[in-house]
Length: 300
Image 1: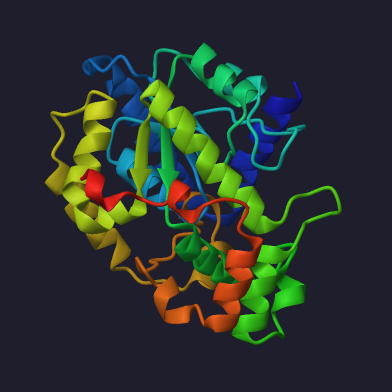
Image 2: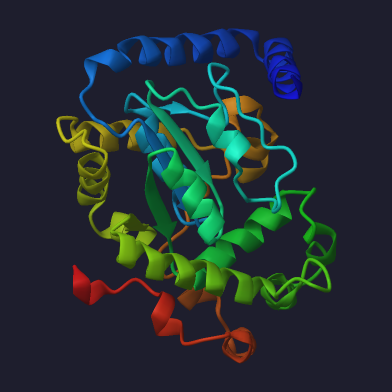
């Protein structure tokens, strides 16, 4: 009963904050569910395990233009993520509430663990992995922390200069038993790359989108058996939406589906911002070879 209580509270809060938008979200998702019987794709559930700041919000936006309903922000789905073993983990309870006959999309920032993979596969989920150059990702994450006052590192970083703050942002540990931020995300990428190759999951790189956004979208459409959709039309819609510029701080302050962590980061931005001190600290704290977790341009 607890999950229904929280779900009801979520709807009531949204109605009080954004009543018109809330009704529009419900109507849009209801239409998708009603139309779901008209599509032939057998892949009703898609889970995107996205590295933070890797374009996972971009993937989410692409699925918004498909018949999929967002699990964690739709009022037409019950999303109960309490009592997780990790802040970004998933649970059997989350997946057990998903209707099997309707199209549903879930994005999380979950690191690889066998138990997480087994939960998703036991519910016939298609798995997508979203990745990015860890150096660019860490830069984007640093600016996110500065904009998000509730982040556990915000107070420590806000009064430091860029070099000091950025180094602390990837060498810090959330608690004594935690790995450093750099090690956590190195392992995050490395583990998912390995399992993605073994299981033929769809591995998406932000660098790939930057080079050829249409192919990036087509790869997604093919993977979920919606190749009849136009990648060009979806791309143009996303470009139009992204042109409505809003600062990250304002985006984080929004409510419901309007809230987003999207930040248009440059590919190779690290080359402009990594000075000698940062480079030395990054290389010193890197737990493995950098080449193991980078996008391979020669494989295109």
